[in-house]
Image 1: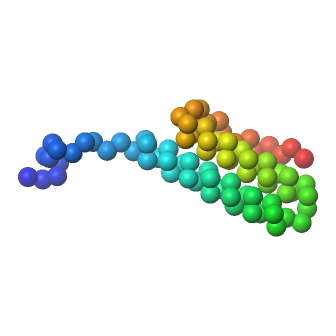
Image 2 (image 1 turned 135 degrees about the vertical axis):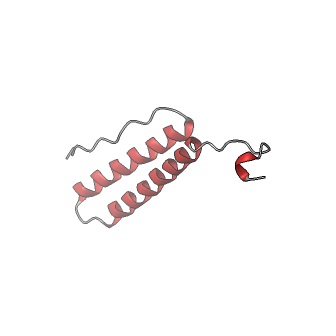
Image 3 (image 1 turned 90 degrees about the vertical axis):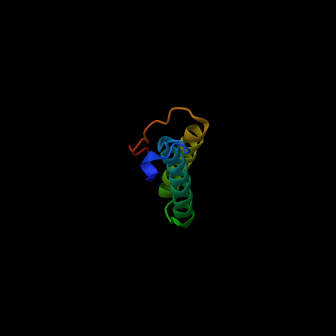
Length: 78
């Protein structure tokens, strides 16, 4: 019996795994941005990086909670 004929396994859905990967990616990106902000010599750049880090954390939290996740705002607000 080939694995395609086995009925004792549930079908694997990728949606949940993809969402978890995206949550982890957003959290990791937030950490990298926060670290870059700590090393930044320019206070304005540090503010921008910290704001982007906070946005990624908020996106990860919304995605983990099952809510809508808007695309990041890529416009500069100096």
